[in-house]
Length: 328
Image (tube, rainbow, N blue to C red):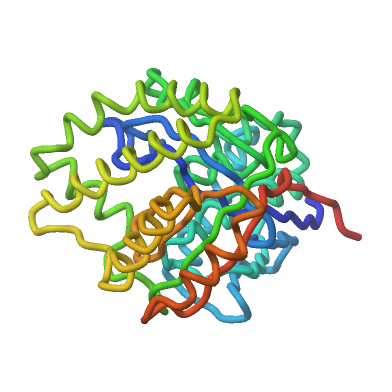
């Protein structure tokens, strides 16, 4: 075993993922595909080293629940190519973004952990196989192995072998900006995994959400290929609000938004009516993401920063591929 460090950037789904396929829970198979944009700056850095015993620190702190998830994922990576017992590992991770707040910290975190562990264990796996492994830690992590625009298919096989992400277009394909509008602080009250299961079990809109997702993915990929912001924005907003409608109809309702979330959404729509072309999306959290051209980003960010309750607005370009290096 070697020591290795990986850096992976978070991604935001433009066409959403919500819900899991029936089957082995450890495979973590999505009920629908997704299409995402990897972001600059927002990233996780993870180092995996040989240790006397398993240990895990996130941002300098220990968390037993998180350590158990990390150990399970190390086991998955090890067992993908090794029949024997896994060596103990010391794992240190730093999130350069808020954790568990609806900004996909699990995507960058598990992507970085997968890459670092595979390199530390000296596994000869291609990015597709690594993507399938990362998915088992977090569904959106499969997409964070690549920069730019990435699509994850739902797959059909029970073993998940065909459920892996693939890059559509690199970061320099289209010079867009994503504004991340922070409307709250701290972790969200209900995790995505629990929320997805609750929606699948109780929301009357869940079957329609699953049935209509593939058409959204095709529309989104065509819009990306054509660099058609109006077409991409329309299907992006449609996917977002369908997902949140499914959440709202869950029993009890899943409401990840707050008043500032809605105010920021209305501000984007007001700006669009005024000629500032921009489109909104929001994940399972309170924050709002706004897609726009680079020349409009500063003006839109200023408008959104002035919305009461907004804590900050980050302006982000498309980000790079995940990377890994062996350490001495």
